[in-house]
Amino acid sequence: MAVLPTPPDREYAALRREIVDQIRVARVQAARAVNLHLTGLYWSLGSLLVDRIADGNSSRAVYRQLSADLAAEFPEMRGLSERNLIYMRAFHRAWPDFADLAPVLSALPWGHHTKLLDRVQDRETRLWYAGQAVEYGWSRAVLDHQIASELHLRAGRAVSNFQRTLPMPQSDLAQQLTRDPYSFDFLGLGPAMKERDLEQALIGNLQKTLMELGKGFAFIGAQVPIRVGDQEFRPDLLFYHVKLHCYVVFELKVEAFKPDFVGQIQFYQGAIDDLMRGPDDHPTIGVIICREKHDAVVEYALRYSMKPIGVAEYRLLDEPPELLRQDLPGPAELEAGLDVSSTDDDPDLPPFDP
Image (cartoon, rainbow, N blue to C red; front, side, top):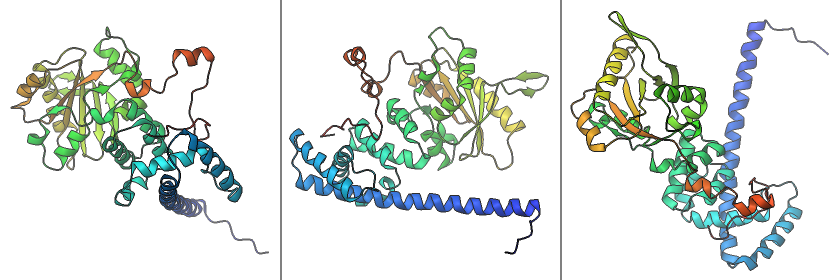
């Protein structure tokens, strides 16, 4: 058998990289195609289950028998458990207009759908989370976190002057990327913290901080030195947003909003634009995150500012939000030492009427 000559290292590395890239792309496309057909199949099966099996806990015996029969018929196929069959039924009921929403719903893995069915009861809110998960590529763990933090009630809510100071569509995108309040419950800080404590805690939990800020933020640094004249200034946190194509500077305040905060962040924005902004970058956006604010005071303070600025509060949770609390074990379960964790193969069944 002939032996092929060994190619030069550089040529071989380039060939290997191209092959690996093509295989990865093909695998992603194949997974998406499989997911598209699987989601459609589950919806269709759910339609049959809704039509043929009556509601009520007494019908669970039918699901149990059906699951056993299907497993015997298709031993190589996963996802035909009693639990999953009931989810299929709930999935069909949740999305009777599946064909119209297929571009979004079919892009989500089945585990995301079961999480949405379990955790979000309102249809419009469920659809909002589904769309966000598709757009930003959330894993199931991230989706779970965003639901628990009630992101749908906080997204795009900061008081800002973006509509007046930024062109469309950048103004809308900038607004959508804000939160109010920002949820910093993962920091474990008490009310007596100082601004430096808050800043260091956010940096020390950078992965969770970036998840809270949203997709597209690239961390530049904390206390990045900016020299103006013979003085040095250091804004709290500096990011670059890859979709907005601009720097975003955050100022952290552990007190209530004051109008003079606007002057401080405007100074930073102007200096960053003059000293760091590239020819293809848009103007720097400023975000002030404070302990509390009065919206009318913020609106007055921003009224005549020519710099794009948003103002929001932060939240440090003393107790878990309602959605998260529903999943935690109660005293009786803790006493009994029960395992209440949930996985795809967990024998516990979902609610019969979600």
